[in-house]
Image (cartoon, rainbow, N blue to C red; front, side):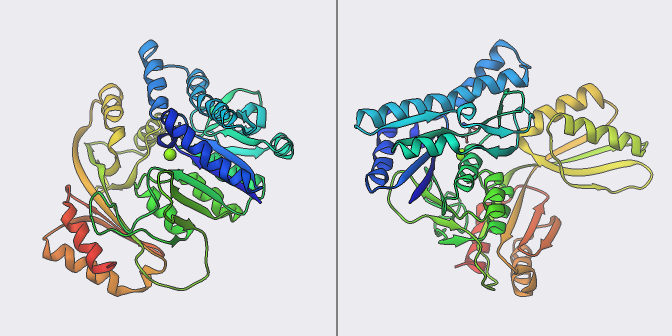
Amino acid sequence: MLIVKKFGGTSVGNKERILNVAKRCIEDYQKGNDVVVVLSAMGKSTDELINMAKDINPTPSKRELDMLVTTGEQVSVSLMAMAMGSLGVPAISLNAFQVAMHTTHRYGNAQLKRIDTDRIRNELEQRKIVLVTGFQGIDKFDNVTTLGRGGSDTTAVAVASALNAKHCYIFSDVDGIYTTDPNKVTVAKKLETLSYVEMLDIASEGAKVLHNRCIEVGQKFKIPIITKSTFNNKAGTIIQDKIIEDTKVKSIVKNDNIILVNLKYENYSIQLFNQIYNCLLDNGIILANFINSSIHSLDVSFTMKSVYLNKFQNILETEFKMFNSTFSNISRIAIIGHGIMHDDKILRQTLDILKINELEPISLETNESKIAITFKEKISNSILEQLHTKLIV
Ligand code: ASP
Ligand code: MG
């Protein structure tokens, strides 16, 4: 059987951990399986490389930045090959160029187009463990690209799909997906299984578990994704599509890293609107919940991730000095599970909890698999706990 496994940065963070991963993969190999392992850069090394770049040039060329950060993954795969060699097992490391992992040419956020499998298959035929760099690709001019932070997950699922593997394992320092963040609600439980849509909702609502695009790739090519811990043998969570109609809340995500922005200006025109929006897009700032609450003047509110705040304030300072702006730290809660829109009991119970706690939402959105509430302020973990108790346990 062919086994594809991906290990994250923490899992290969030092010599002992690299040897631990090597041993785990060798067990699969010695049972006669073909083994392909995708790795991220060790520990925090991608952040360190980015800091080195910014230290020498605060606005480095995107091409050179990709050239630099992809070295992190190359360190991991080559050390892993050496570790396996020291344990007497033949292994070979391959980078994106050697595999031929074709992407678009958008540096820093490229998309995978095609993965050649000849080289990997050749090495497997020679009974080697194949170690592939995650996160990186090459464009049509052989420039090195990256898939965006956390992109090794996407490499792994795409490699699994290109090789027709039965599923793709993603190993990290957490042992699966939980009913809510166990750091916020201690009674949170690990989920056995989730659909791709539910997992996408969980990831895009801010739970940092998997790279969003790996879930999309898994869904598109029907590759079940199994998330597990590198540090124990517990069963993980399987992400796959099963045809069952069970309306049930699977997970609740509370995101406290959101800023509510309000901009006011007496003149409103579509040109001005376009100008702001394009400028933010150029700077990679993504807005959500955009509303203009006045017809004749500009009075817009929207939310964005707090990581964008500094960059956004700089843009206002340099390009849109005329706006009156206010910023507040807020929370958003998303209740996720298939078909929950069709069960009004879930929405009623949620509204009851908001009422008891005298909370005012600024928006409430519902769709097939999600109820999402954005609040005017930061809300406590006790609200999350109350929702979790009522809707899940
Ligand atoms: N090393 C890259 C990052 O830190 C890619 C990954 O970890 O998936 O973003
Ligand atoms: Mg990751």
